[in-house]
Image (cartoon, rainbow over all chains, first blue to last red):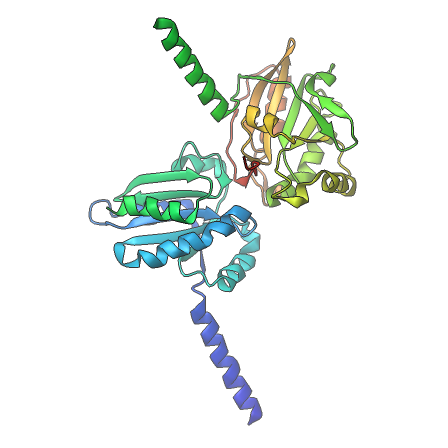
Length: 163
Length: 200
């Protein structure tokens, strides 16, 4: 009997933790580009794509700012996508990190291949240093930055882009 | 008036060149930086070299760590074959304590680095070269008294797994230079840790 209670408890806690973490989706560059550029005319969504990694200190520091944007502008067609550039061999680490930080934005891990093949597709001025942030709206790139943000700064940029 | 315009254009070009750093074909400046053994190292110390592999790297960055054996491998292969390797750590050690001078000494000893591991404590060299991340390679070839940039970018095309790398960009470039050919892939882009600049 005790055993059954324990099992039920474990079962419930498993469900609870599964619901808490949204999980990390592995994605390749063509898939990512497609997601953020497809609906050219009808999609008013502002896609805010932040390239980060668990080992990148300035990236980790600014993640809460992106989380705040995701929350604040949820009903304003703003979609934050946190794209991790951790090594694929570190996928468990990324998952655990996302769970521990309770990230609510969509979290992806990029199947990066050879970055030399695709970095320019996002921006020719990007040389691969992270953090880097790119925004798309209506199929067009509307913002790019290599480097980190202050919270207020990011918020004000988002405000100008959703007008 | 004309002079002023010319001056302004020159200033503008100067500024943008500085912001973008060296590209293949540019002349690289010499430097004099402190090595982990306390000595000072300059490009001009390498009198018999055909060129120099300058690698901006550091201790803390996972990409640098992934590449440190390969950097040492390049040094072992080319130190006595005309293209010695010089590593430069440009990071602000206030923000990254792991990149401190004493930690560099420890890492070099632990890993048996066979190349000078220099401190760019004013970050002037990284800025002049236009290094933005670690690791970031600038392959220089000696032309007369000048060092000319021949390749800028990554070491190879697979950070995660050295054995799976298809193109070893630095080695390919050196092979081509040695054969008297132009470098076919002279710039590449890779993910890396942004260099931590000192706060003004």
